[in-house]
Picture 1 (cartoon, helix red, strand yellow):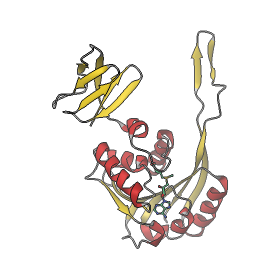
Picture 2 (cartoon, helix red, strand yellow):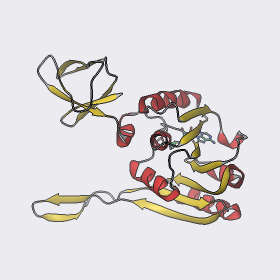
Picture 3 (cartoon, helix red, strand yellow):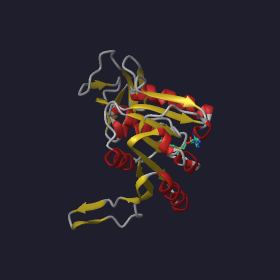
Picture 4 (spheres, protein in one colour):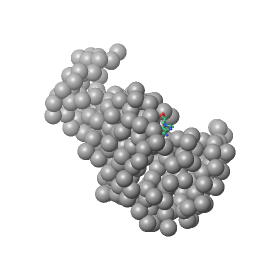
Amino acid sequence: MILLTHGDREYLREPGEELQTDLGVVEIPDDARPGDVLESHLGEEFRVRRLRGPDLFNHLQRTGAPMLPRDIGLVLGETGIAAGDRVLDAGTGTGVLATYMGRVGAEVITYERNPEFAEVARENVRLAGVTDRVEVRTGDLTNEADPSGFDVLTLDTEDAPDVVARAGELLVPGGFLAVYSPFIEATREVVETARGTLSDVRAVETIQRELDVDERGTRPSTGPVGHSGYLVFARNV
Ligand SMILES: C[S@@+](CC[C@H](N)C(=O)[O-])C[C@H]1O[C@@H](n2cnc3c(N)ncnc32)[C@H](O)[C@@H]1O
């Protein structure tokens, strides 16, 4: 899978496919490589790019609201997810978090209880090029008896506390839990549940301010505060 770009426009395509736009038709060669410049039949130039993590957020077909790349960065940084780690994830939703984790080399089992969303997520996993590392299972994680021994457990579901309650059985000693929620009430419930069995429990709000940089000077944007949600991290004893 590659990206074709023209100015601000981006198109996700397979090599060998045809791209049809108002800027003309582009025949994409089977051997298209990053850096190639392809011309449409109207003479417009499109550049070939390799797909990278943030492109998943922008181009995968959306079902459940995907996590922002910056929040995913916090999950990766705070839990230290690395190549070869076994990660249990729910719910898959669009699969942006799951595919990011697969792209850094983690072996991910991700649960999605909505069968139609799970089908879309499997296609997204294919587009992200991580079918060998990310397995989408259709099912409700609160009902699944999973094998234990996960290095990291990542949750982005309303019923996360039900899974957090048995996180100690799912995680290896020293393994990490990361739970994302857009709401304070849910975050409090996760913290209180995690305190029952896990250590190093802490919650953070994730806010990011854009900078306006122009000829008059540089200052934080006066646009909306960049709140996205809350993350709870904890560690198995
Ligand atoms: C907000 S989305 C997750 C987005 C995902 N983290 C991403 O980055 O694309 C939440 C998804 O969890 C699914 N879900 C909710 N509770 C679940 C459960 N107990 N087991 C499995 N999936 C669940 C929902 O159907 C929904 O698709």
